[in-house]
Length: 112
Length: 286
Image (cartoon, rainbow over all chains, first blue to last red; front, side, top):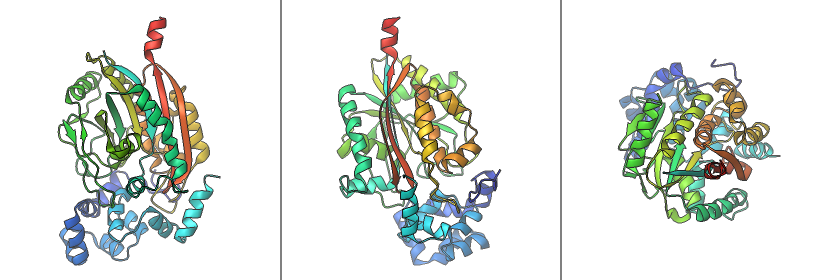
């Protein structure tokens, strides 16, 4: 089921199990104090939540597709992206390999 | 007895909250979306509902993936919003109606919908933004009963199941002995996808089909599988489950009296629809 819609990983039980530590860390970013703690010592913060090697590398590289491949759910990843001031157009552009302006133009074109 | 007057469905994109806070309603980007609420305000002022039953999906404020209910019904005196980590201003709390909540819960479980019962429940932007759109200045004149549907972690409930859930909610509300005027609210959608190489996916044609069919032929839409819905409406387009439940809760003859559709708001095809539910008229006629 997972790969048969191009460019889409369905967040199912397999992904949810794989991504649990990463998503749990992102869930903690609902708190401003936790966001500050992450910024102060990212390495220690990730260690505290037991991120897998793959998840840690993806977070370090700010690579959203790699975070999703490692089980990240986009609603939770958006809380992490927010720490870096990135919105869903920014991460959309990153995932589709376009500039933010190109990504926005693509969205606008869908309305015509 | 309580009466279901109709329903309002609207997109709940987080950036709308920022636009409201920054008073951007008349900016060229936002105006086509916000002006779609003029009719909603007129309709609410005319109908004066006492309670809104809000079908929505939580995005990791009240529920995490450790314990994620498929269907959860709020039964709190008050619903608070908190920091969601996205820089949206925290909303004013919204009053609940626990007596009606428990009546709905009792009705749902009797109808074999074994829901999670929440006496303490935070509500996220998927409740507060539609509320702020309907009631500018956060001047709530309704109490709410929030009903959360899992649209995050698959397996999701089917479209057909959500339509039936809505019908059970509708039956429960109509059997409530207090003389309340109740509106149904659905939040989220329409087509959008935030994740993967297909991020930015929007399907105008499919959205039009959904809006064209929902009032008169919801069963046609209920036949889609979740997999096909993800393909047609995008990974987060499954928020339409909330719309299906809302439609199910409108138990009489349903007429669409308002529709606004605009692409894009953030990464989303934004839609606002108002339905009237002609239950009383039918009964009087009969």
